Length: 343
Image (tube, rainbow, N blue to C red; front, side):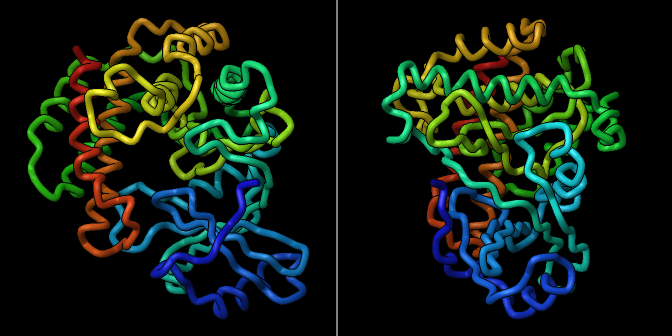
């Protein structure tokens, strides 16, 4: 099971103040409050809050200066307070606190779901299953394809974003994040942004897009590799071109080019090829994937920005997570991958 652990040094909150607030705003808060922390993510801080037998997940943005539009707890609440009724992998959000004076940031409280999460390789519980890497992969792609084909209006999320001009706004927003996160110059990042802006593909549809679907944002049950039962981290969800979402998923997948760079490859083992992933998604959605190289390049470029943001937080002392110490090199490598994908 994906279990919480002790709270990391420097990521403690004023739990007495939070306990008083939660008892006033949530049901089922009888009994002593207990707190632990989920350690899997790199940015948003995610905690388990327990009142006796009742469990909640508590999420807030990371400490320090936040890039515009990033770590949006209000957006996460807006999505998860509605989407759970139409999409089984979406946990239900129960409460949003917008009073930043309470703990220095907005926070959201949501449903706790239990299960297992794949970080880099197949877990022991799945090893008895035949062809399990393919089955886990297909399950994740089915969940993504289902999300991309939901009726936006039926979900009550038609005002979540503006699909028209979505990619152009994405390029502008991520470009701003890049310039705000720089610790040194990298002309290649600016060159790639210019090339991406000059060749934006025509969107084939408008969908609800998560913007970070990957194995460690998905939860399975230990006896079932064929269904994703939960997806986490909805703070970047919007409406737009679904291939932007799929391109991000592909950017986490093992790729022959990754061996050239000093990058932490997420998946280890006998997972299917990237070609299999592409073909499966094509069959599930019917989308034309002839422009996929552009979407992959954009995803790697965004990955470079995210890595740079995390590295800047480490350099400034806003985070003491030693995993972030090498993220400056990671950002540079992702930029080179984006250049390769653009051709």
